[in-house]
Length: 212
Ligand code: NYM
Ligand code: MG
Image 1 (cartoon, rainbow, N blue to C red):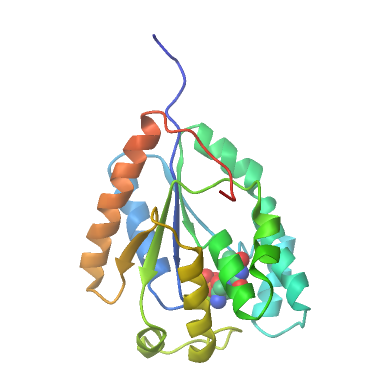
Image 2: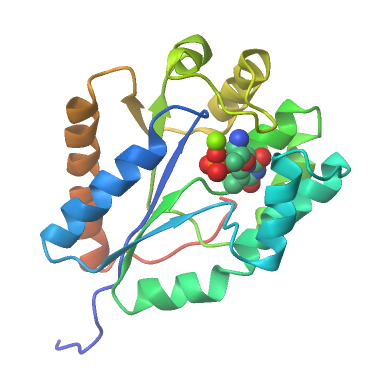
């Protein structure tokens, strides 16, 4: 039967420790997809532009102190405030590359000692990614990369705990990319995964919700 429904965009999430190369790879992926003529936008969480995002940014740069539960919920709220726009973009055919998402939210807060199920709860009902690409690097190796800035969480011991929680969260659908490989190698692997996923979405793969 004929259909006038526009093919939807794909929701592609990149996750990984700080200094794993996510932001660099997201930028490369954006120009790759745009170059192929796929309407694509690059988003990131936290989105520091909103008023919630500014509270998060102040917290991360140690300009404010917040209870661990409170900051967790702000990170989640920062995703909820973008949810309807996210759905609209996807449904009108724009692919979204997202630099960090709910998995960062749960992994970083659980690494502080918060209960993992409690951490997942506020993420329920957000849009589920079509692909999660995990840029896999050891915390030690990541720390060698030009060093960390002075934001909260940028310490090797803490990042080790975060890595453990990412491992708990990841399932067989995650694409694990060796982020210690050469940048071009990583770039090519990501491109393969994402092109397959964009095609599946074009062919009618339905959108689904977290947390399942
Ligand atoms: N982070 C990020 C969280 O703790 N929870 C979240 O929900 C998200 C999205 O913020 N160390 C942490 C991970 C990072 C920090 O992110 C800032 P970035 O990508 O460095 O701007
Ligand atoms: Mg960072």
